[in-house]
Image 1 (spheres, rainbow, N blue to C red):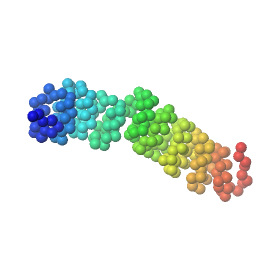
Image 2 (tube, helix red, strand yellow; image 1 turned 180 degrees about the horizontal axis):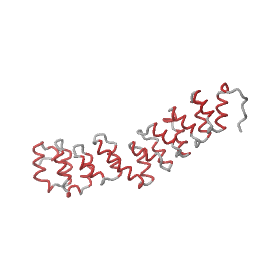
Image 3 (spheres, rainbow, N blue to C red; image 1 turned 30 degrees about the vertical axis):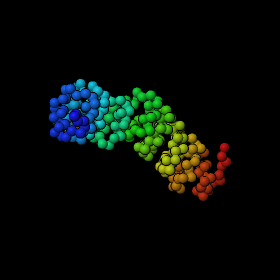
Image 4 (cartoon, rainbow, N blue to C red; image 1 turned 180 degrees about the vertical axis):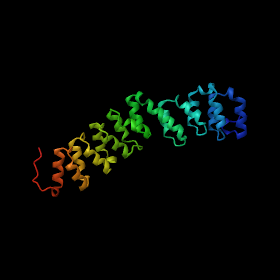
Length: 245
């Protein structure tokens, strides 16, 4: 009775691979990957057999297997599809150098994606791609990115303060409950001259007295926001309030 390859003992697996490497079929290689005794030496032998690495599933498993020698894993990163790379980039079981190679590939290929692919990827990408999608011109991509659990406050502050944030992005940030609970984000929205004035004014009531005074005295602050602050905090000012247009 034939035994499944994935259940072979350590010595049996070594012998099986040594005797059958040149004749293995795709399913047998997958069973070798699943065997707990699959070693870097066995994986290296598979990685150096062109007939086997011609199978996409074999290349994918070589990159994903934590025992694959890094030189081989990094080599096959270049031959994987986008969404497989995206999934592997989030897998903490993969060694860090291999994940970095994966992220490099993702960043290099990001410009080739369709809108649908960018929207889907933005929801679950790693920080390396977050920095790319932050500046995507399509609002749908940014709306998807706001759902991503790997998006950080520092990323949004970098966008808001960069001078490259679009009006649509600023409105989306202000409407997102997750991020408008962050004081630094609220303040950055008020300070950004591109933020629609109604959106900026809606954030004023959450700011401290000190920040309101600084914003009021800043030369780049609009007259509208100054008057809003004066009506919120009339005790700050001794002069009569002007009527809003």
